[in-house]
Length: 318
Image 1: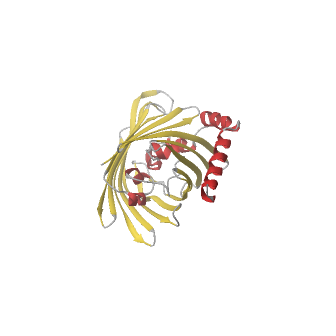
Image 2: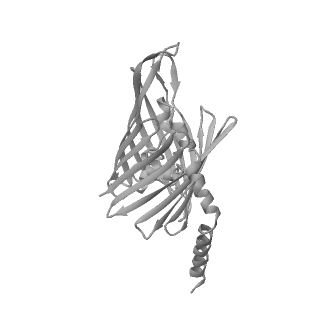
Image 3: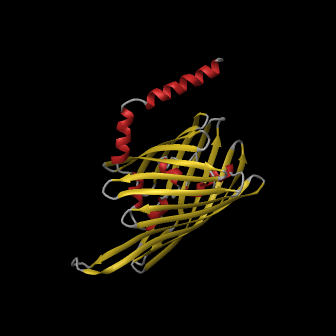
């Protein structure tokens, strides 16, 4: 056995030892009992919908995707992730949402020319029914609320190991008979420093505001910076720092995925939101399965007081 093989064996032995420790059980219990700050951000209606990444892979990894976004799903996290597209890809996402809501999304991506790729994506969140009340707290009947967005994305190389991606999006929101819409744009960069290390930068939801008839609200502008490293063959670790500019909140997230036997992938993540006097965080996790170009991803994000959010992604490469 040469020195390199011995080093890899030592790393694997250390990993097995770590997984066998009692505190791994404690982390598992924390995963089941700790609320998710990512889900908390998404519970608000209106333009907060634009902060949600529908991808089950992203949710399972705590949304640490700025440097690790790949394929058609990267249109929601960092459009520069389309740069790694090798063929056409069609993805469908479905999620149960708290308070009887449902989230569905779809994306199609394909290579264009000279290393550039493009994507079309759609997402819709139905919040379910709500009971209306007047100023005296008397019931006034029920009403519904829903958000949806259509987007076009493109990405390509710009030299020096850098990739550039852009997204143009039309967003509309409906609540209790009032409708508002807005145009927004995303921009992203990726950089490969060396074979195992990647960096990502994403600026999302650039645009004006929305007017429901009683004042204009700004879109949730955010800036995300992330890094990813391949620790072992089939094992990646990613970290992100996301800043909500107008809300003055920062989210720090880490995520990992490990491929088992080339067909199954295990994922886990943690995200902590810091803003004002509070700090909220939570664990997430999920699994992925590959079968002849078909990929199925599942994630589970617990949320205290609101049940949980379970997401399923089906992606087909052809």
